[in-house]
Length: 150
Image 1 (tube, rainbow, N blue to C red):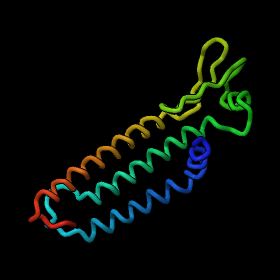
Image 2 (image 1 turned 45 degrees about the vertical axis):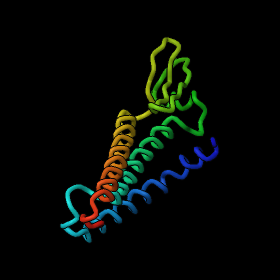
Image 3 (image 1 turned 120 degrees about the vertical axis):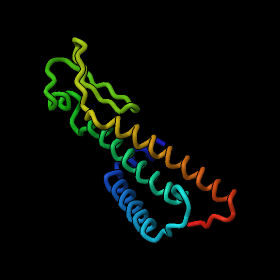
């Protein structure tokens, strides 16, 4: 399982933009060809595409955060590159994403950018909201047979 996660994070710079752009193009084409009489609210397919885009942004931000605390150099050189002086250790958290250089005095310097965790959680929330909206739209479509499917 660890090797799959490492591979996903390693391939993320290629996979995330491809997934996002692919879903965005499909969404634009879907919205362009959609009939205005499809009823109120988005369809399940539209919601699924929005969920894929939000998940791609969230995974991209997560990967950025994880990789910002990862260097080929040893942890001492990583902390020194951030300007942390003195004896230090590196602490890492998976979620929320965090990599800190903590000095022997207890002062920590965060290596992960401040925008990473809000983007990760907002992307996850938007993805979940889009999936729930799509499920409601699909249930509504199945319950009312007079409404045409997009």
